[in-house]
Length: 275
Image 1 (tube, rainbow, N blue to C red):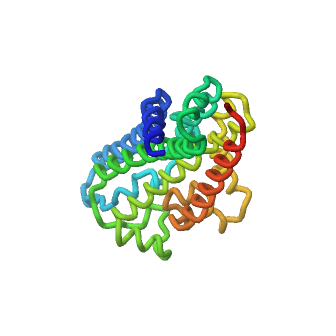
Image 2: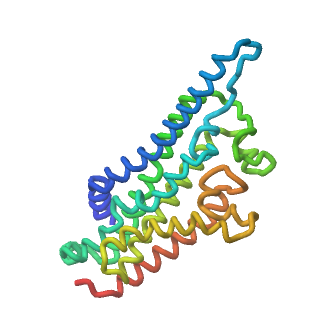
């Protein structure tokens, strides 16, 4: 399976959809940072106009204050809005297209069908996870450039310092950042594979492409229908440091969905005659 997986990954990462996804994700990050820098420059100009310089503002914020996972501003929402599109563009419709153009007939005459299906699932998962991870990583670098401090002041963030995850972030700034970015990768991957599942019943290219977008949209607005104590179980909260979301909660949701989607896709499509 390793050989066909390499081929599928090469197809996915070299596709036009991957380039568009990366550009869209980076555009969301650029938009957020543009307004962040503009607001900070406005504050500095205001302070410069004060008649008396009695107070010297000392900025001790860390990158968590401006990184998308901890920045409390509406401009960080666009990446969440478009995440479903971003993860599906690289390779989400590839299985549907492979069936339409006869690629499956060609590849499955040389290798086992199950090997192809496994490689397809993993390639869609990895490409989707990568394009979800890259914008967050770029924003991390920009946030670190703006906020090089290593002491975390909780005020001004959504961090709950009295929780185990909040304490862990305070004690391990960089390790916690790596864990958060890993969660983004896993969530982006599992969101992308919804295109594979819908391709079993849908015969419309646009429907397959937009399914992860609508799934993410539902998950984004669904918390408003539940009491506040359940917010932590939804993506916006376990992908950030807001409220009480933690990577442990994310994994207890992402891993079962990965297993279910993989099992359903491989089992159903293996039994289906596509040759």
